[in-house]
Length: 108
Image 1: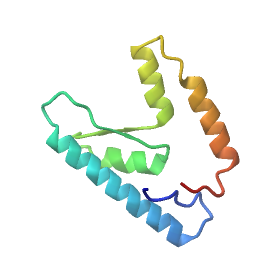
Image 2 (image 1 turned 180 degrees about the vertical axis):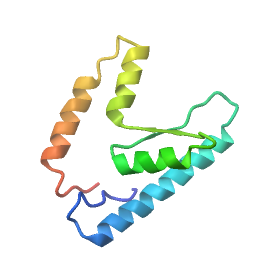
Image 3 (image 1 turned 120 degrees about the vertical axis):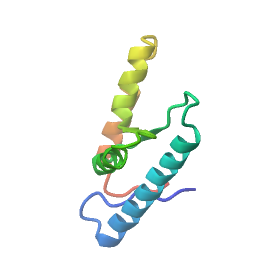
Image 4 (image 1 turned 90 degrees about the horizontal axis):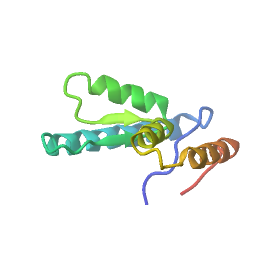
């Protein structure tokens, strides 16, 4: 089991810093996989709905682009564009709505 969710704003400094550390480690792992798989045609994608994490990933990838960070919603749109028979946007919308109504406390 991985690290639980970090704070959603007012959760205190510790939860936020733990979440930031976890995000940094995950971005580093994506970078390592991207480097190892460079030239193989395999794309490494970091799916995160954390806008700050995606922004940091983009900043870190300016020079080499070893991986791509995108939101789940954007990734689903791309998948549906590639294969119109997929209909998973509704599932993502339902999960997003459910997550936002109970975002104050979640455990995994």
